[in-house]
Image: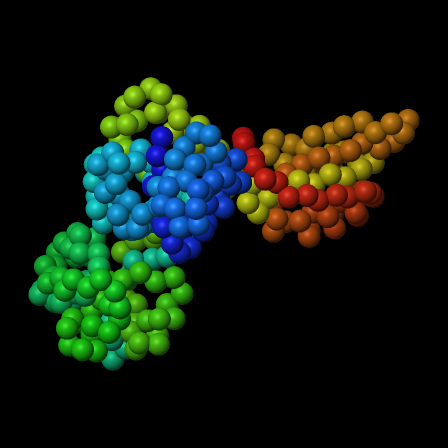
Length: 287
């Protein structure tokens, strides 16, 4: 089965890394090839991110990876979101010039000119506010439109807001939060084999995502302090306890720990008399 992947940029790089960690390394025939094998199960086709919803909807690819903003802009019933991949995070926002008195999108009057490369999302958003707008289509650099008198406001993607500030613009509202999504052709999912493949693929990718910012911690702890250790190492369903061959004084405690909690967890274990603490990365984690 075919998976459409962005042909350049961060979405492309992160997608290929994710597939490789899931055991589906891309194998190219040449450096600039537009197709590649993903493991022994899939064929990747590399196209523009904005074209991927259409490729999947038309059945040119059974699966695809692209931004939620592009999926929702196209709003095709033939495309179903399967998994939020967590990278490529950004927001589709409404912005005005710094000197504008407008503080929220609801304050914009009828007929406001909106420069955007997301006309569908912009129209639907302002329609939900009861405001009819005039869309000024742009393919890029929407930030310049208000300064040229082409539009009154813009609807565009931002991640840090720095480009808005540099161009004298101010955010007044968020239309949606976006990130990379795994999508599938809804008609293809009606077939049992394709539905099984979709489930296996989602499980594989999700196991990699679940392992991020998790660490596997192992430590020898005093047997007589196990009740306290259990409170320190809750793990997924409690720590795994293994006997140590030392006449019973020690046991080995194994658990999955959030990366952000490692410092405090190790300090608490040492306070309980733990020894031989070892922390390793986790490649994949299935519940």
